[in-house]
Length: 157
Image 1 (cartoon, rainbow, N blue to C red):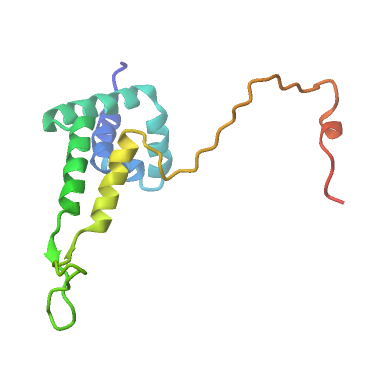
Image 2: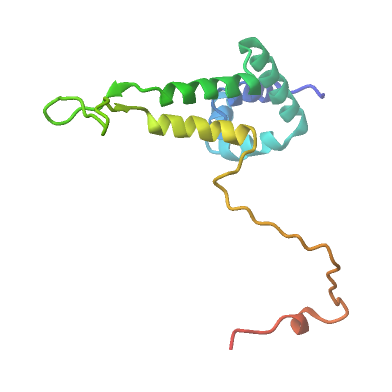
């Protein structure tokens, strides 16, 4: 890795704070007028990318957070959100009962759904995405000897 300038190194360190290239450039001492352009350019430079990746790796090791940790915490959050948290009450403050006379409890449905979505994304479960497949295994030919104007009809009339 080539030696970075002091500004580039500071940019990389600042970028990891909030992942905002423009603000990182400003905090690193670049002009506010050019910060957006410089920030964007810096993110395309391989040496700066490598330094950011190295800093990020060090940070993740330091705080001991990895994909397994995130997944474990998401599962814990989902389980916690699904617990019967508090009884549901009516306007008079009395507990609402089901048909068998048992108290009905509420749970954090939004939190449970968000945690479950995170877990599903982590393990690439795409149950909520439309699955589109193509089982075609034959040959598809295209005659490239004709000009494009002959291959496509003009529908503008």
